[in-house]
Length: 304
Image (cartoon, rainbow, N blue to C red; front, side, top):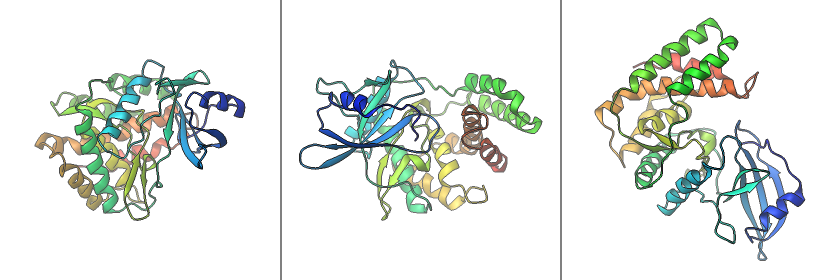
């Protein structure tokens, strides 16, 4: 998470009046991330201070905001550890601030794990399967913005910045992604970005929150696991810890067993997922806000 859009205290006070949650006591930007603007906001509701997260969406328009609201609200209603956006006094939860789509969300407990263990991975796998089931009942969808066409056009746009070896590797990975697209794998709505910095755990290992659903879209379900494994199960040397990987899959399969074809596609999807995040990192700036080479190196190491 990060803070790209700035505003005055007076502007924030005017915005918050719509919610009737109390008097503004403090706000501060949340550092990190490469996409949306996030702030911690503290309000006094008359009985004490209550903390919230203000998210200003930088990456999509007003027409898409209701979809993300529905996703978060659906998961919250199913009892999953997800923050549902607050509604204004007149019932609106998709709002406008600084001319951009904005959500006011409760601040969840916990912190991002630093040293990942098997319990973390099992709970993340369990969450993903539970979320896939819950979202299967949602009468709303969103096309995958990171499809093959996007990957190809992005590769073309950054081609001049790439080394020959990087360009060749990405071309090969796009061919692999195109092949995976011909498979008939189970699909539905996915989180699409469940990295460690999008999950909150207590010190005792309880999963208290999953955040940042702004990559949610319709895709093959196994894509979510591939993305998560690449971040949660990666060792300090860049390899994948097979014990952590197996534990995450076990957590998922406790809720939804994987089909044979999904298991076969998992490592190839880990490679192509690494390519996708390498491309998004290249797009974050020149130089990039996060190093794309980490993802390209991971894709090289992943073998069946």
